[in-house]
Amino acid sequence: MKRRLLLSLGTLLLGAEGWAHHGVAAVSVAGPEGPGAAMETTSPLPLSQGLVFAMAKSEYVPFRTFSFAEPENKSFSSFNMLALGYGASRWLSVYLFQPINVKEQDGVGRNVGPGDTNLMLSFAFKYDQGFQLVPEKESLDDLMDWHFSLWVSSTLPVASTTVRDDRGEHFAPDMQTGFGSPSPAIGVAVMKQLTGSLTWLADANYQYFFPHSYPFTRYQFGGETRLDTALIYRVYGQGGFRFDLSGELCGLTLQRDRERSDAGAMESLQASGGTILYAGAGARAYFGPVTLALGVKRAVLKSLNEAPDQQGSEGLEHLRAALTLSTSTRF
Image (tube, rainbow, N blue to C red; front, side, top):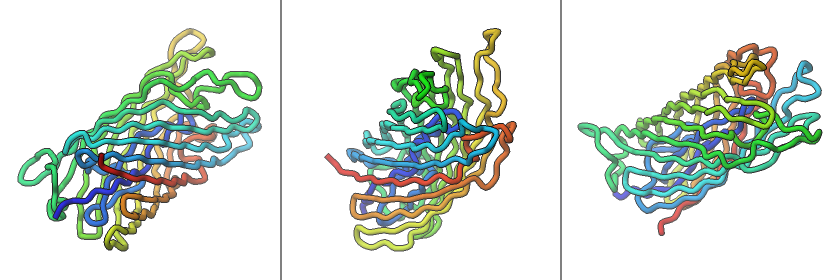
């Protein structure tokens, strides 16, 4: 039986900066039958050769507010994403992501604009009596094998880092929509379809941020390490329609941000960085080549550096809610 791929792109960029950090692109491919796709956790399945996809995603992140941060609490962020992908070969997929971010801070104003464009290459392979590249076509039995991917990506510093707030001053680095310098990332993903209806996914990745000189400072965002795992259950699937439920655990470790001191040296910042564990749930519906997904997650455990002084950072959201719409076609 030929595999019929329908694209479903899970959480892409949780793409902000600083206190509402950056994230990496997470991609997932699934069809009416076979393995499922998660919201946050990358799937190693590639786009089939010649397949083109388009995706739009929006994530809403309201932050908890605290008296110590008044009157400049981070209010909310909205991380939006447009994406294109192409199956360059049976084992190589190419992706282009363009974020459009909204960040609001009480007493300072709102910054709306495009973020840094992100390019990704994903290399897919599997294990079936030895490691091998993913073949051009796989049966449903073949999809039960262990599947893996290795991917690399980098943002391109095309977004503005000099936008001014309502007071006429430059927004702080974490409120700008761009990083100002490239931010490369590398990751791995693994998948095993446990039964005809249950799929397990996991991934790990690291993203590095080069320092950037703003008009008012030199700043470097802390590197990010992510470790995600998910279970996806196919509730219903017949013809071109499928409905899945998913549950995920997402671990995130943020290194401290660094800023140039008065003496000219780059120094680690207080009230930045830490480790957070998120728990999330999602639902995904397939209507032929169109997929619609909705997911929500929130922090269940966290250990933030100087936590009483942080606000507007990962781990201090009320929740993170994401909506994704995607489609695919072959030219």
